[in-house]
Image 1 (tube, one colour):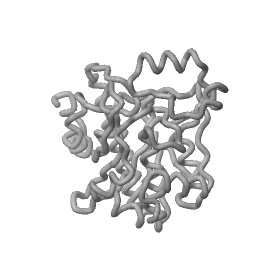
Image 2: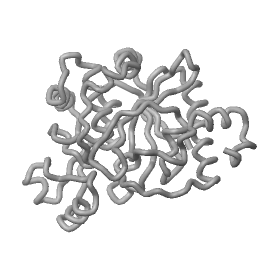
Image 3: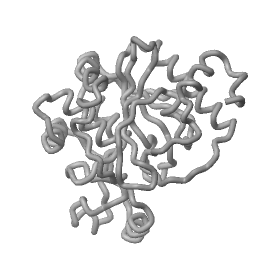
Image 4: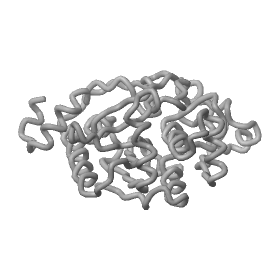
Length: 267
């Protein structure tokens, strides 16, 4: 950690919290490319974590939706790549992020509880954070779930596909876990994924439609264990229509359902 010895005390503390920065065993919807982390990338990640921590502290919120830009998805009209829940750990006086990642290069996933430095360490495309402050009632409903490992995993499906269909239960991607867990928090009877998805449909959630032709789908499926299309309806696939849960669609839904304020960008 000599490369960050000149950082201010807040950055130094974040660096200690994110000591796994150079060797993350899991990523959000990507393969397993091992590359050394440059000093510049390390510093920029820590600086983003610091800016985000300051913003969150000033917001007065206890639970927020937190997004990062880990990949360039501009071609699909999508801004944010990955979503988690950040909550204020009052005992530690720090922010924790609960989110889902696939084990690199595989179609298996797990839930993680990390600090802000770790959350922003995943080789970002752009050093920006998306934050959506949840309504007080939403925060109150979510916090007990997020603080308890067992309850947080209630609707977690380990089988992972980066483009999982929103209305099926065969696979689950990272943003989908966050969205379905929101449904569980707001509707206690949504104790399985099918019920959670029914609640989301009833409340008007609309997934993002990606246009991916057959050749791209074939190439993605052959070359990537964490991408599958066989849970999508045939009619959709043959029309090159791939519906999936994106951060952008979650942000729109949560605001329209009056469960949160508009999303903000931290640069």
